[in-house]
Length: 153
Length: 153
Image 1: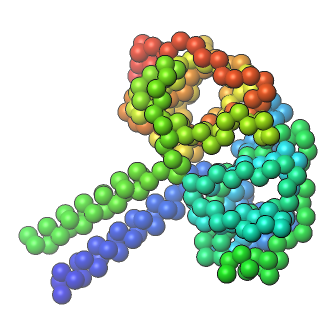
Image 2: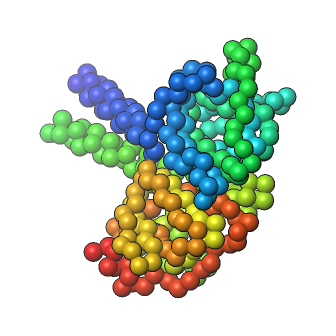
Image 3: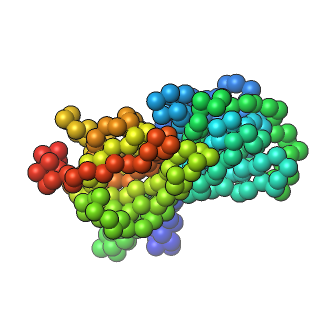
C-alpha cells in the first residue's frame, strides 16, 4: 500500500515534469489576434515585419485547439516551420494535410489556403513570408465549422 | 531506508525524463558537416535550398560545444532563429553577442561574421537566407582558437 502510494506520487511527478516542459515555449507567444482574419484564439509574435532589406516578414503563430486562419493567399508564397502541436494545412479544392511538430510546409504564391490547430490539439509554427515586394497577404472568408469539422473527422 | 531508495529512484526518473525531453529535437539534426567551412562538429538539415520561387534557402544547424562557422558573409543577408542552447554571433570588428534559445538575429547583407556554440553548450538555430538571387554565401578564414577563446572568457 505504502509502495503503491509512492509509485503513484512518482508517476504524478513525472507527468508534471512533462507538462511543465511542454509549456516552456521556444519563442514568445506574442499578442492575441483581435482581427477577423482568424477563427478561435490565436497569438502572433512578429520578428520581422515587411523588412525591405531582407524582403521578408517572419512571425511565430500559436493556435489554441480549434483555432485557424481564414482562407487567404500570399503573392510571394509562405513557408511554415511547425515547432509544436498538431494541426492542418489545406489548399482550396484539395484534401487537408495533417501537420505537426517538425514539419516544413511550402505554400506556393497566390494559392488560396488555410492553416490552424486540430480540434484536439494546439499548434505553433513559425511563418516566413518571402518576396514581400510582390504584395501583402490577401484575406478571404472564414473556414466554416462545416469545412473545419470535415477535416477533423 | 526503503523510502529513501524510492525517493532516489523517483528523482532519477525525473532527471531522466528531463534529459529525454531536452534530447527530443524539434527539427531533424541532418548530416554532419564535412567541409572546411566549420571548426568542430556541426550538423545541417536543409529544408529549402536556393529555391527560386521563394528566393530563399532555409536550414537547421546544430553545433556541438566549441563548434562554429568560419568567418563568412551573405550577399542577401541572413536571419537566425535560435531554438536551443547557447552560443555567439560576432560581426567583424565588433564585440560578440551571446545568443540563446528564443533569440532572433538579423545579419545584414555583405557583413563578415561568424556564429556557433559556446564552449560549454551546444547551439541549434534555424538559418533563413533571403534574397538568394543576390548571390551565395562567401566563405572566409576559420575563427581561430585565440578569437574564439577571447569570446568565451
